[in-house]
Amino acid sequence: MTYLFETEEHAALRAQARRFAAEHIAPHAARWEEDEEFPVELYREIARTGLAGVGYPEEVGGSGGDLGHMLAVAEELVLAGTSVGAVVGLGSHGIAAPPIVRFGTPEQRRRFVEPVLRGEQICALGVTEPGGGSDVAGLTTRAVRDGDHYVVTGAKTFITSGCRADWVLTAVRTGGPGHGGISFLVVERGTPGFEVSRKLRKTGWWASDTAELAFDGARVPVANRVGPEHGAFPMIMSNFAGERLMLAGQCVAIAELAYREARRYARERVAFGKPLAGFQVIRHKLADMATRIAAARALTGEAAVRVNRGAPAPGLCAMAKNAATDMCSAVVDEAVQIHGGMGYMRDVVVERLFRDARLYPIGGGTREIMNEIISKTEGY
Ligand SMILES: Cc1cc2nc3c(=O)[nH]c(=O)nc-3n(C[C@H](O)[C@H](O)[C@H](O)COP(=O)(O)OP(=O)(O)OC[C@H]3O[C@@H](n4cnc5c(N)ncnc54)[C@H](O)[C@@H]3O)c2cc1C
Image (cartoon, rainbow, N blue to C red):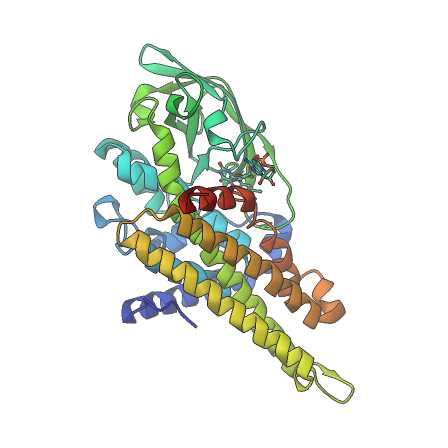
């Protein structure tokens, strides 16, 4: 199944993404997951196809298209590649680059965004801190102005692609407390006082790197500030809409892959003299899985259409994320169940997806924070 809004253009992109993932990701997926890393050359390879630039304007080296095209590409990369970790690692520019595209200067777009879309650089977004991620307005990493530099002190954690990033779009406190005192700085690798303090090990998404970052008097040029001083909070919030829908889309893709694997296994595996699919209870499990995926896809697609039309729709995006994450958790759990003991074994795709799925009610805004947003937009 595809999103209702899709056209022949989306179908062509899907085919291209499917080819890329089947050739460049799937054969290595199991090893990269165990290695907790994929080769950096993959960034260049996907950039050469233009797939990394989907959703970005041609003026910054992108391939054009919108959120709908990005959802279609990401889904095929997950379905054909089977390594969610590699796909999210390859896609970390999806949360780091958009604020620079939208609010940066032409010089910042040339220096930071264009090399990323050419696959020459890796980037990351640094908002979450060891002291807290949900309360963005409470972040404490401090940046003090000193001439034409900011001096940055603090820490960030759980940063996707942070270990290998050439630059990190970092949310820092330049002003007083609350959301009105936050700015965005591009902190470049090699800046004295800035380092990766730890590579973090995690439940799923193994092939992507996740970093803890330390800033100890790191001097960052004022020219690296994106947007106005103290003006980052609205940029962070507007960035969330796209991020949350992409996460919802990843949930749809993960569930679809788990469903396909379970359906195949149910046809092949024989118990009590017939294939598992010959038992009504197994068929009904599969039917429920397909239904739940279709429902989450419909809501994610509707939210994407509204965002593409220019409506920020934070409540609907939050609903789509929660619906997709809940659906995904339930579907991968059933997929493991249908696989029996095999579903609990390493290197079996559904086992990996089961672990990957646990991230989604947490990352990009937790399930509880989504419900807070829905509560606000619904006016409780
Ligand atoms: C694999 C991974 C990759 C990530 N990648 C990035 C990245 O690239 N960049 C980045 O900046 N961040 C990243 N994150 C961070 C992620 O966005 C945060 O983990 C998330 O926002 C939650 O923040 P926290 O972990 O500090 O939890 P906390 O904010 O400490 O929350 C803990 C619990 O309390 C609940 N809670 C908090 N406040 C409330 C409230 N007001 N009402 C009800 N419940 C509440 C939460 O829902 C949660 O259940 C990543 C996280 C992971 C695990």
